[in-house]
Image (cartoon, rainbow, N blue to C red; front, side, top):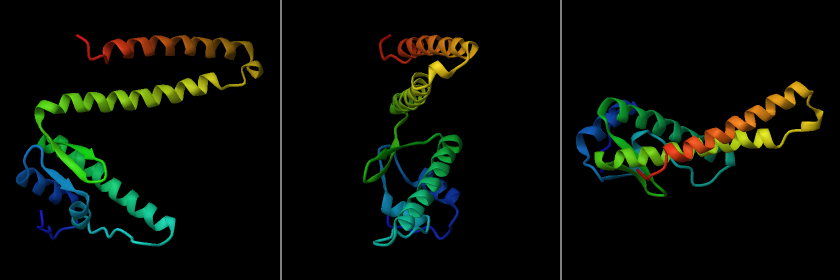
Length: 152
């Protein structure tokens, strides 16, 4: 993948990927950064690295969404190397694993907010509300465990 697309528009990069890659191909970070006209800083302040990383992740987020919705192609991050074009037979499993991780993080944050509260400072009606929410959370966790299980 040495070709450089002479357009800063990530949609053209998407279209190129859709037309010129095959399932399982690795699209390297360096190639993507070159296509997005991003130059990885070699040294400098943390803000410079943060901006580079933010810009790159923003491009990748937009591009991945477009590839999925317009070309039915999914990308999987290969840590430290790039993104792999996911074969359709793997797409459901990868999407499910990603959804499970995101749901787990969200539910864990919610549980922390319910658990680490100054309960004794709440009025009685808010204590009941917190208890009701904790019960709902418990039911949600059980439902998630069953519905997201890999067992039939």
